[in-house]
Amino acid sequence: MTRTRRLPRKNRTTGQRRRVVAYVRVSTEDQAESGLSLESQRQRAAAWVSAQADAELVEVVEDAGHSATTLDRPGLTRVLDMVAAGDVDTVLVVKLDRLTRRLRDFHQVFPRLQRAGVSLASVTDNMDTSTACGRLMLNVLLSFAEAEVDTTAERTRDALRVLKNSGRRYSGRPRYGTRLEGERVVEDPRETLTLAELRRLVEDGKTVSMSLRQVARHLAEAGHLSRAGKVFTAMQVARLLDRLEDEGVTAMENAA
Image 1 (cartoon, rainbow, N blue to C red):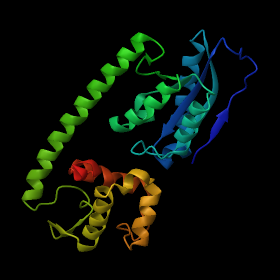
Image 2: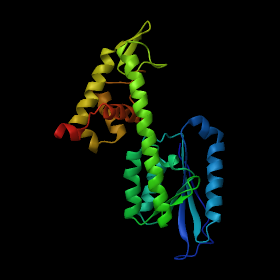
Image 3: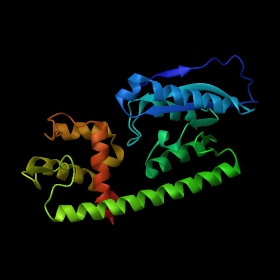
Image 4: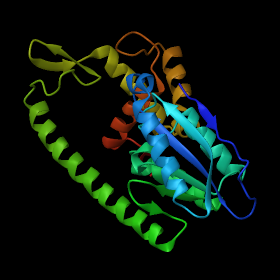
């Protein structure tokens, strides 16, 4: 569910004020229905803009019920279209994780802003890349975020490896490609075939030119469905691709 709220522009003075588009997001439908988190983000974004002498909030774009694990979000697409069209000067988020939680996705989005001469600002992180100090702050934040992600992932992989090698259950639900037999985790033949097909697509480099939904359709047409027997969602495909990347399955490595 995505809604766009266009704000009145009667006070805008062309050429003198920064045109700011605020991007707000919540990840679950429950949050979207309550509207509380979205409203809080709108208010904080409006307050930030009001505090800037040279800025005007021209639009608030919402992604309600969309996870940050993928860039395939209608609201984010809308923002990037505005950037490409030259309709904005600054993209504002309340916190960087509203934009994305993945460093590799951030490094896809931010260069597009830079090429268009558009700055990125974050209320909570006290950062605005229209200034040298803001660009420095961004680099610091990304460095710490990357270190935290790497450390957490390393610890998690080590712990799960011990449990997996012992054949014991290590999560509330067995990982895709496996199933439970009593308290032991064993391979699920049907899901293993699905992973093999997805792995083949990655290694052949086909996923580079396909959207997440196109990958899901390809799997369905090949007879590969989710654990619930339905066509995979874009989010489910993104998680499986992340898993394959963690396992070292990439088109680049295959080509090498």
